[in-house]
Image (cartoon, rainbow, N blue to C red; front, side, top):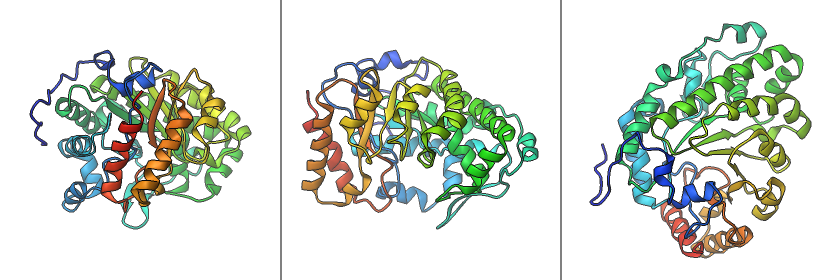
Length: 361
């Protein structure tokens, strides 16, 4: 397990988000003024980091996800090396699907594969009811271990995949470009669709609540594929389920509601719920915040590919985003999606430094 640096106090998992009231990340989520704009990065522990590659050279991805001590080590490592303002537990949104008997496998070059996809009402009816605290206990153990090892002023984020994104993986059998199978199922198997979304909604809420109980100060819902839908489809087939999911999450920890390709859906995502709405790079931050409304925090939204550019360009783009936030309380700086695997490590570190420098109030 990663050793604590001198002066890094371990804290009890019994502490709540209130313990972190002065942390800039928590202040931003509550739209309170902070000394500077906080920054963390989706996939801040990943293949761009030499130390992570060393761990992965000895361990398969799913094996790593099931190893609570290693997950906590990787989580803490990212904070120590990058100096970000929040940690996010190392895990994967698809892990709850393993307990549903879907035959999840991560195939090199292809990503996640579902060997037993859901394609009918009968398939949905066969899905088991699961106890997330039991079936995902290794994630909760990782949260507890990471919380013990993290600095006492660094909040920890727990997370889960959104019902629509999880359903898409289950139906498609893996990743997809056009989501033909998912949309066809949604349009033609309405009873089965609603049953599946209700089932996944319960799992997502329960899993997030368990992570909060284990020691997470905030949580994020990843709706990675929701941008494939138009507004009418979101309203009819997703909004009620997302609203139910988010309303079922404990108010002890603020919730970030994130999706990609969502420029046309931001107002609807706000309606579904969340203390903060995550924004990708396809819309300017200022325009996104106007759509969402200034009664919510926003998170985002640098294009991850900018991190392949030189430092001058990284600085220029980060400054643009910070200026669009106009110093308003409630901005968490992040990428519009995760750090890409081949990103230069020094550029990631530089971005964090630049945000801390330019984001001082």
